[in-house]
Length: 308
Image (cartoon, rainbow, N blue to C red; front, side):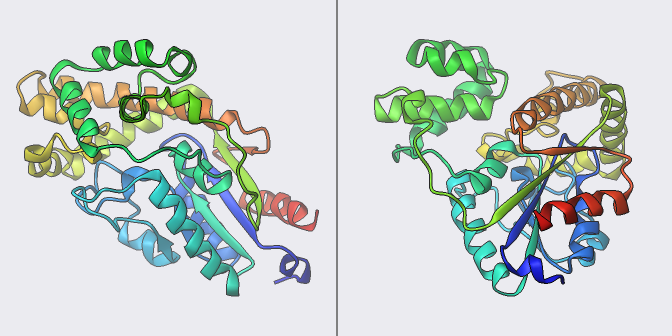
């Protein structure tokens, strides 16, 4: 390892839409720098969910040490704040011996929690979230939108209102604290004790959509329907409000045919990828590469940034 790397510890953050090839790049960089991978994909935290969350294969997991892969149960309470604290502790330990660590994931909020820190929110009664999840299951996303628009029009105007996780989070804080969710945002946060190099993978939208459609077909062939069937009795849990499972739950509830459910999974995953792109493009410090990058050229750019 070059001497200049010893001057300051570095976190390489790999971001981009789903199915773009982030895992492959993370493993390649982890092998190059002989280091570990921090997973920041909130869907991959849960051990009961494998196929529908595209957890790295056994072969991939053996190629480099991974952290935060299937380390929790869907029955556990695990927040982005919990992840931030635990990830920073793991990074602190890894940086004792390693100069570079790789972080990868498609969950923008979880990536930002480590890179920038979170806004502080008060503790709220967990029953509020349970009731909101039940409302979503029974009546869909529209009542959540209407309630947030009334309680916090400022947050409603700027957030992704098609994301039930974000709506429920904003609502539970607004209801539980008696103050708008937006009033807790954008407070000053402490600087991280490591430098950050953010790398993004991108492709033409048609290519991303093709890769998503292919991945969903492969998931179904690998047994996603059977995996969802085992989890169906727990469909109200927050961890299961996830693309790939929600649509199959609708099929099991006889609201959709299997063909319609698969079509909805593809459509909703494409929408999710579009939202990911919007989120990650907000970070002006991210250097973007094509999904069909040449690894040696990408590493050369990283090396130049490390020297700076």
